[in-house]
Structure formats: C-alpha cells, structure tokens
Amino acid sequence: MDLFTIIAPIAAVLEPVFQQYAAFGRPVLDFLHVIFQGTFQTILWIAVLVSLLYYMMCAYVLLKGRGKRKETPVMGELPFVTVQIPTRNELVALRCAEHCLAFDYPKEKYEILIGDDSNMPEVSARLNEFAAAHPEMVRVLKRASNVGFKPGNLNNMLQHSRGEYIVIFDSDFVPKQDFLARIVQPFARDPSLAGVQARWNLLNANQNLVSALGATIVATCHHVGIPFMNRSTNIGFFCGSAEAVKKDVLVKLGGWESGALTEDIEFSMRLIRNGYRIEYLEDLECDSEVPFLIRDLYRQQMRWAYGVVSAYKKHFVGIATSKHLSIKDKTILGILFCTGYFLSVLLAALFVMGILSFITNPPAPIDIPLFMAETFKNIALTSGLVVTSFFALARANRLRLTVPMILSSFTYGLLVTYYVNVGIFKALFRAPMEWFLLNKQGNKLA
Image 1 (cartoon, one colour):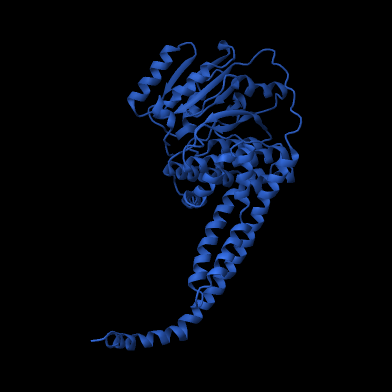
Image 2 (cartoon, rainbow, N blue to C red):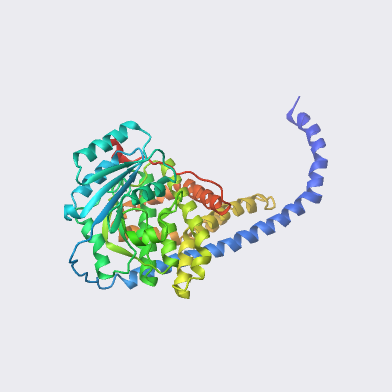
C-alpha cells in the first residue's frame, strides 16, 4: 500500500473542514489580525515615546552636570546618631557592623542597633557574641517573628533608638570610614531636610551575567533616574539603605509602613506630599552586593515593582493634590515613576501582540529578510532603556559590563521582565506577595 492510498481517505474527511475554514474561519482570523496588528503598532509608538523620554533624561543629566558642590558648614555640636542594621538569618550583618564600628565619628556620638529577625539560632548566637564583644556600642534587638518584614523590624528598633538622626544599612552594605560624618553633614547646611540618601556601588557587579544585569539596573537608577529627578525638581527618594532620616520627622509621620515591600519609596512619598525634602548625595557612595543568582534577581525586581506600584497607587491622589509641589514637579515625578515599569508592560504587550499578529496572518511564505529587518527596526526604536543602561554604566565607570549586560538582557532579562510584570499586576489587583530573602556572598565569608 502506497502513501497516497493511505492519505486519500484522510484528505477526503478533512476536505469539508478546510472548506468551512475558508468560508468562515479565515475571515474571523483576518479580522483578528487587523486588531492585533493595529494594537501592536499603537503600543510600538507608545514605547518609542517612552524610549525618547529615556534619551531626554540622559541628555539632561549629561548637560546639566552636578553644578558647583555646596559648601557644608562644619557642625558645632555633632548630633547623636543611631545606626540601624535590620537582618534576618544573615551573618553578613557582622561585616556591616564591623565597618560601622570603624567610623571616624566620635564613639560617644553614635550607637549601633542590630535588628535580629532570624529564625536560625546559630545566626542569633553569632550576633549576640558580637554585641557582647562591643557592649558600649552595639545592641541586638531580637523579635519573636518578622511581623511586618523589614519595616516592622525598623519600627521595633525605632522605639529603642536614641539618635537625633537614624542611619540605615541593609546587612550586605559596607560603608567606608568617613560615611557617617559625611551623610549627616547636609543636615547642618539645611536643618529642614528630612533625609539624605547616598549612592550605591556594587562590589560583585563582575561576578556573572546575573550580577552584571542587576548592577546595570541599579546603575541606571543611581546614575540617571535619581540624579535626573534631583536636578530637575530637587526631589529625592530613599532607596532603602545607606540613608539617613531625621528621627522626629519619622515619628511624626507614623514611622515605617509595616509590611510594605518597599518601605523606602512609601515613606519617601509621604515626605514629598507633606512638603519634606530628601537630599541625594551623588559624591557619597556605599558599597553593597547585587543578586548573583537569577532566581534572586527576578524575585528582587518583582518585589521592587510590586512595592513601587503599590506605594504610587496609595499616594497618587495625595501627591497630585499636594500644595507643596508645583505642576512641573508633579509631572516629572509621575513620568519618572511610570516610565520604567510602564515600559516593561509595553514590551510584554508588544511581544504578545506580535505573536498573535503573526499566527493570524494569512498563510504565506515567510519573507525572512523583511521579518529580520522589521524586528531589528522595532528593537532600535524601543531601545531607550538599553542606551540609558550604556550611559549609566559609563557614568559608573563600569563599561566593561557592556557585553555581559547585553548578553544577560536578551537571556535572563526576558525572565526578569516577565516577573517584573507579575509584580506590577499583583500590585494593581492587590494580590499578596511575600518578602524574599536573597543569597549574599558575604554570608559565606562570615
């Protein structure tokens, strides 16, 4: 029996199906194709506009410059400062505390509190041993559970803090000897300041492709996004670590929001809407770590997306109606907050609409050269964030990360983008999300 004999009966049965498809199915698919293709083109041009905003931010940061550095008067009576290190099952907190002990700040003028939310007895024991070795400077505050996550821990330490100013470090941060003196200096120049934020520098940016991508994300924030905001509006934000906050303002506004996944952004928005200001110090850097496992990186970025969108939802009306902000400030604030995560949603929508448009297209041989040309054109038109990443790496003196960043962006970056969108939509629809504990290189060395 030949192949034709086998296929002929099957073809006879399927013939009516193909006729029905031609009569009814194809027109429906043609209609859907028009919708998908039109939606794709609309989203594409919105993404192009967002990309142009990135180019504008780069140009502004480059042309505006830092300006002349403000002279800070020497403080007469140095303030008493509380250094807080919230931690959970992280021995790397000991490294942070050791560097804090080495500050060139009068020892009688600051204290170190370690907020221990650990559920691993061996970690708590090591933290207690360290505090016992430095009883005049270090105290460990142990909670029964990590209710409220990091902000709950910070609020617990707030009750025991004696400082006029509070300086906060995540456990993987490694401040330099002069950090404490420099971060409190701006308060002497401007007593109305509510907070000061330092720039982050990443110790393990070169570790692998994942750390290169994570370092690029942080560099884009600290070398483009925050400087653009600070120079164009004089508005600053806390980033969650390497920051100083005036204690009485923090208490007045109700402390940190317990359970918030980005307590720094949420409190920053409360400050902004109430007319307080945070100064960003571009010339003060603090070393820290970046995730080096892809699971940690996408979890971190998903949490950040969730927290930022949740905070913006909560404070949007308050900021929009605030009498302390100009229309220009409100506009720039809205654009900057929406741009990054909005572009992630747009790129995901472009991918989905592109696939749907492709599969509903009338059957025909694929014009490979045309397909490739259109694909590269669309990538070029929406490459504002990629170009901004190059610019940020150059500003951070990390151009050697360019190739790893490109490779990682088109591999791991696709997964990270997916989870960022998961975080965004969970925040929009108020779905719950947990706080993820990330792996730290410093924990292996402690």
